[in-house]
Structures are given as structure tokens and as C-alpha cells.
Amino acid sequence: MSDGKFDNWLVRWNLAQDGEAIMTGQSSSLLLPVLRDGARAILKIAVDGEEIRGGDLMDWYAGHGAAKVLAHEGPALLLERLSGPRDLTTMALRPRR
Image 1 (spheres, rainbow, N blue to C red):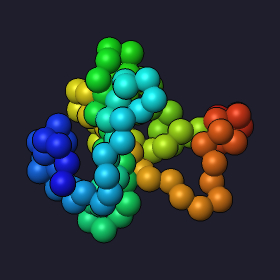
Image 2 (image 1 turned 135 degrees about the horizontal axis):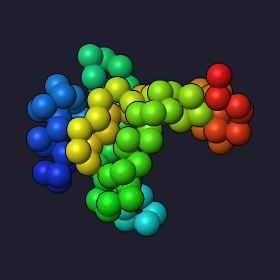
Image 3 (image 1 turned 90 degrees about the vertical axis):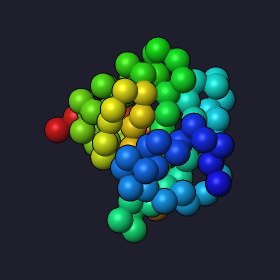
Image 4 (image 1 turned 180 degrees about the vertical axis):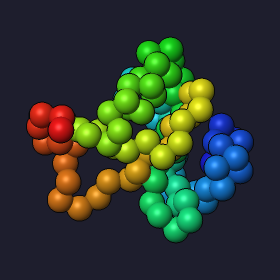
């Protein structure tokens, strides 16, 4: 189960935990694998101001060169969970269309 930092968002966005929580290397965000209506996603809770502002940028990218934002409110982002042959580094280096 999550450590409580995710609980509000799990209920608010009707999510089910699907793995263990992860702290990013710089301790700037908490990540939790989740399921939303059976679809795999990542719940990201930003801890610092720069990461919180980065949520707006993720929204703006709209899935072009970045994971698609499924929901965004304050420090919380619900992102598509990418798997398979798609690679975010490759996507980011391609021109936005």
C-alpha cells in the first residue's frame, strides 16, 4: 500500500495502486504505478516548485515528446505509463508535429 502521500489522489481520480512507490533521484517527485479503468498509468506527486511548474509544461506537450497527461491538479499528475518499443528520449528528440 502507498505511504499516505498518494491516498487523496487515488480516491479523487479513482485509481488502484499497481506497484511500489518510487522517489526520483533528486527527491523532487514521488511516483506510483497505478491503474485507471484497467489502463496502466503513473501518478506523480511533485515535491519541489520546479517540478510543480513542470506539470504545466507536460500538459502543454500533450503527449508529443513526453508522456501524455491524463489528469493534472496542483502538484499531482496522472501520466500514461509507457511501455514497449516507444522511448521518451527518442520521442523528445523528434520535432513536434
